[in-house]
Length: 455
Image (cartoon, rainbow, N blue to C red; front, side, top):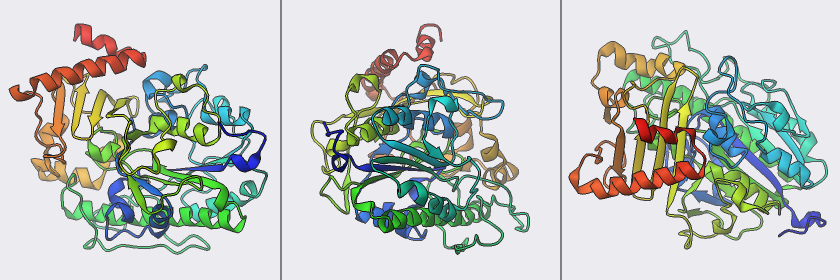
């Protein structure tokens, strides 16, 4: 336990959460084209997790988990909080800023909120949600005031990049612009990309529309990276960097079909980079299984406030940061998705080990429901227009019409194409995963547990 009376024993903590940043578009995770030098340097100065997962691939629901340590089906944020969707945390949910504030930390937030009700998230300092738009460099510069203040502090820095935004009307294929400005922001310089140079990941089809959208997406990712770099520069200039823990994650996978809103790997297997002055390793990886339900416990652990581990669905991963292959750690993680927009009802519960992924599609008789921006995207509409049978490595029919159970051997089938759930050789494995999922739902008081009894 840290000494709360000694500020030097309690590090500052910066939690950076990007919006729809897939792991396949980060240089240090293997993309040779996209320019993310500041995230790459953060990984060189810290530890990169390679088995890190959101628990639900939808913005608000994921953020409710990040800021509470609870699965979204337990917080009440079953889907989007904004507009008429109206999901929100229950009044008795305790949030990370509230717990840190009670523990003596100054708390600040900047950028995307996407949580509700605001009263449960009592940050001491902050700016309006949309004040900086997509200008992440300016958003970071605005944090100088907060960073220069007394220690210890917690800063929740949330970019709107690289979320979808609107169409490039001047482009013949009308790709999304992902918030890329028609003219560069003051004090910044946009990084553009050739459609021929982008790397098309296996879950997407290699079409002109996909390439056009990826080029725009990369540009937004690079702008995000420059915002990350400016914030780190400010921490250094204010002489706070050497006493600050930095955690970088994305709320969910990239805003393309077969990624965001799904619990396939591109939707949930995400970047997590931790730079900690309290740990020794630099430029290494950790392959321990972690989820965003672990973020709140881990931040509290760094703050010396991790006093009741049983109150969370996640657990602190602070002790394994210096272990490349942790021993005495968990063997499986769980995920829970129910809604995106309120019209996108497709509940899934998932168990994932290092080798296997098991998905329980609770409402499997329904067709899979698209998020509106993914359905309207140039990438998907080209598939519809051409009547294509496949999108990426999966058939369109398999993507929209899913069975009750899906089981994938990720070692042999990393793209999750061959469903083994009906394979008689895997019957015992399916039964084991079903019982584990039932236990998870019982322990987390999942209202969808009762679907086992009458459907």
